[in-house]
Length: 498
Ligand SMILES: Cc1cc2nc3c(=O)[nH]c(=O)nc-3n(C[C@H](O)[C@H](O)[C@H](O)COP(=O)(O)OP(=O)(O)OC[C@H]3O[C@@H](n4cnc5c(N)ncnc54)[C@H](O)[C@@H]3O)c2cc1C
Ligand SMILES: Cc1cc2nc3c(=O)[nH]c(=O)nc-3n(C[C@H](O)[C@H](O)[C@H](O)COP(=O)(O)O)c2cc1C
Image 1: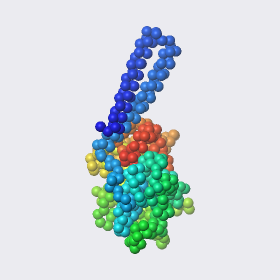
Image 2: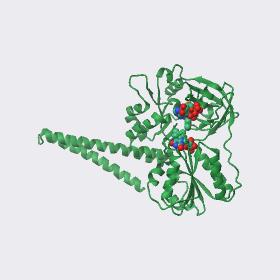
Image 3: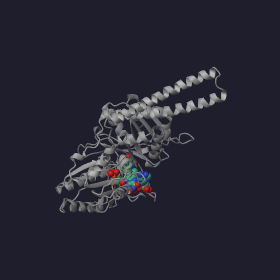
Image 4: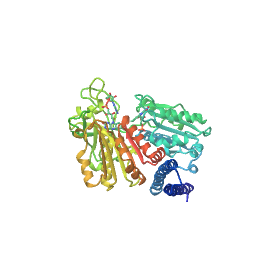
């Protein structure tokens, strides 16, 4: 038996013992007050103490049950720990470590590895969640490819690294490193996590191979700069140039308004058929090149959560029409929902988004989202239905039930067929006081705790502003930071928020 398991068992025993002692104490107190050995005042004080004790013990008992359920989940489903041992890391090997939220950093890490291998270098590719202090202290050369998410936050997969490693002082004077920081200048904290990582490595005595390279929204120039450094590093400056994945010509075959009469912007469900059969997974993203009839302009792609699975034979999207400051339609959403006619060729490429793929095990699933966030959740529900996995609980929020209950027929059918075992809807404007999905979560605190104790995963999709933060705060309140962080590290708390 491992020492952590022993520790947990003895903690459980202590809690059980505490609860039994509290019950015995209550019985003695009841007896003493019945026999009038204690005054009313004394009975009151003792009762308050017992109640407090009961509450505290019960709280820790629930936390303990959650922790144990997750330990059992880990053991049963063999979530991989570090896939690289220090023994298999040789002195001249280079680690390529990525921290990715929506898959782009992972894609660039793979390209970095291919380039270095072409240059004859030995490399190992690692997700940052697999990088521990032993590997850090052994590796002589590390290339980090790190994106920033939220408002200057590290990707979810880096939670353990930032909490357990970046708070330590390590001696990394033997290590040389470089950082490719991915970001977007539209955000205030541009490439914040890449810089934070760079700063921490520098503080630990690690030396830079070359200066941090910032990439603004996939900027080609910055990527070429990084490739140039890779060429110098491998001693092969004739390495093949990176070719971003090609867009393919898909066809817009259906478009349906989902929220006629809504107070909000129009939302459409679209169907895009591929040139030939294509494959993807629930959680993946479609990158679309915006166009505008009569305007020759090359714009960066826009990302949309895929709302269907390959068995549907097409990529389905749920897109809200956005408006620019001058009142015109947004480039991407306007193209898809208004300017492109049915039958129009759409330049699309699929992006693997591993951090929002289905859970590794057949665990129960809690899906939480608002607005167009139903897109990513719908793909997961379709996948679960196809796999015959029925323990699914959906929380969905929008403005008014009458106009904004996206995919209502499908959701009700899933309820009838048992694919959805629980459904909670938050229509914020159907009553005087505003109600959001996070409020529904709080209302369901007891059942939610029960599901988590049974090993459920939580998937969140939709608005970063308002929803994702509100949901995160509610979950922390109900489950505690420790449980939620462990779930995040185990891939049981995943988010696709924008
Ligand atoms: C991982 C990911 C998944 C996404 N999935 C979906 C999806 O399933 N459905 C969907 O409709 N959208 C989704 N989006 C958002 C989408 O990529 C575009 O940002 C959105 O369609 C607006 O692009 P646009 O070109 O139409 O607007 P633009 O021409 O870029 O801008 C128009 C106006 O909209 C504002 N704006 C742009 N993006 C946002 C935003 N995210 N929130 C608030 N205001 C914004 C701009 O500031 C501007 O005022 C997703 C984004 C990401 C990163
Ligand atoms: C919801 C969201 C929040 C983001 N927040 C930031 C930010 O605070 N700072 C920044 O520089 N870039 C930010 N970005 C841009 C990403 O870092 C950039 O798109 C990056 O290429 C994503 O890489 P990934 O797919 O590996 O996560 C954000 C992107 C999204 C979708």
